[in-house]
Amino acid sequence: MTKVDEVELRASVRSWLSMPSGLNCRVVSLLPKGVRDPRPDLVGITHVGGQLNGDFELVTALVRPSTTRFISVAGETSAQRLQADRVYLACFTADERFTENQIEVALRFGIGLLRIDSNLECHRVVPAPISDPISRTRSELLGEIGFVECQLCGVAFSWQAGEQGNTESGYVFWNEIWADHHGRLRNETVSDRRYLCPDCARNLNMLSSLPVEDS
Image 1 (tube, rainbow, N blue to C red):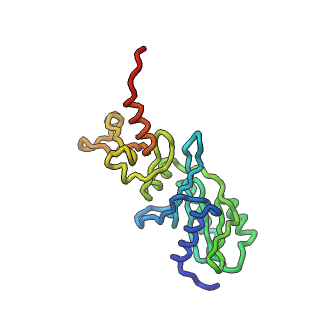
Image 2 (cartoon, helix red, strand yellow):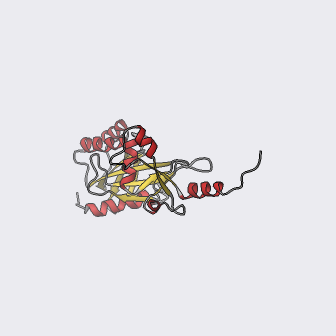
Image 3 (cartoon, rainbow, N blue to C red):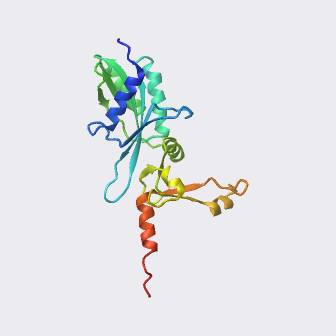
């Protein structure tokens, strides 16, 4: 099988994750090198909410240049179900197809399968089922790509701009009383923080400025 640069393979999968014909992820990011195991190659955020909620899914992909050690790699991919809502294993197969046994392994592990062909185009062979990640671990992975979840509406948004407490770009607040009550204060500082997205920050600011009606 022809060898292909893994950077090109990741670029191909990244493109597929972003395309409407793929998963329509609005954000697809490579992970910093310091991320601990399990470590996906790509992380995407796709918003699945609508008029009544702001839900989103965190999607990961592990990219490999072949199907060598398929069961071990599939198991490694499955471990990412602890931190993401849907997980994919993408393998370069050129003109070959996944075998029935490989598909059965993927189904058993609860992972999706992407086949990368000789033209570096991605084909979804097995859709990834929804998983049940650990909430804390999911939030940590989300934070690794610079995003957080709004405490009110549940959307994912970039936190960097909100660090300054600017309601036009989101808002961060610190739970000092809660941290003190649970013994989490360290040298009179607290790391327990929560975030509001720009919409919720703006809406709360608007509500606070409304006149109070007399009862």
